[in-house]
Length: 167
Image (cartoon, rainbow, N blue to C red; front, side, top):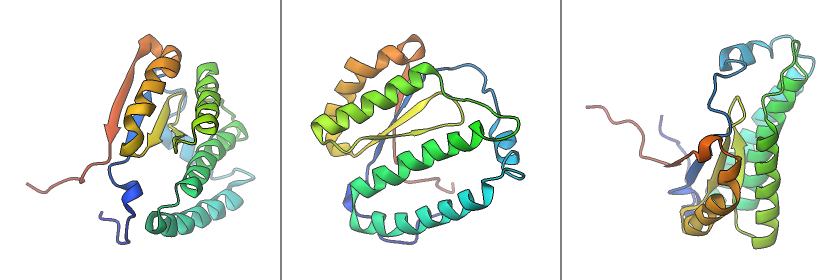
């Protein structure tokens, strides 16, 4: 589905490097994770927060504000994991190396002012998100500082594409 709003050049060709912290089978499937939210005591507020964040992202994608984008992306990632940690049954999907990577990204961003952020999948892996114009510097940071936290030093480099094409 094509995004119907304007997209600032800051978000074109965005990069996603997936750091494979734990390649094992997920502790909780995404379906089970979603099901845990049905009776979650914080679900109603969480759903409202998600809608608020989506509304903010529309204007962020239009105006190119990377700082606000980073705040929302990282907050969403951490909030979703917090919901899993406070569900019944509860789960901690992050691993110690996940937290090491998050802290290293925060330190790197603070020291360099490069707009790099993270999001998390439904497990221990970390997606490092950044604009294409800083890719060389961020990839060097990943290779020098973060690969050691990855299982067998493995990571995947990806980027925004044009979407599916009907053949």
